[in-house]
Length: 167
Image (tube, rainbow, N blue to C red; front, side, top):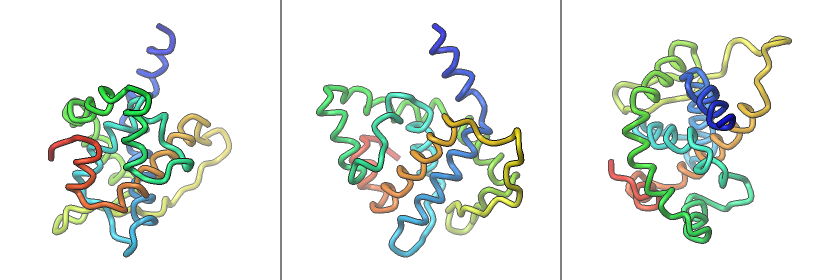
């Protein structure tokens, strides 16, 4: 029960989600061949993945790409977990919107209304002593950036096919 309580405390705030979506967006832009930004829709899928321990765990630099990530669930006989992304995207809709709103308000991202893309910004304030991110959040931020880089290599229909989601 203690682990569940910790997970709820960790993910129950969209402030953490704002940080992770900012890192996802940064990773996407850095990984995209033209430096382009992700459309807002991809943030909902990313949020569903980044807020679940079982979906987050296999994300690492040891994997080559998004396809390798999706295949990892089949190899572990956990393909059912991959199927939960669709429902998690719907369940986390309000959380993701709040996280995006916080990220925009705090100057971490800018939403281009014409293209529907979210662009990362450089934060104005760095962390001062006592306000440094917890190691768990920083680690998850690194994973968010990796996920963004993986997403940047594919178009939306390909991402949807790999992750078995419908947009």
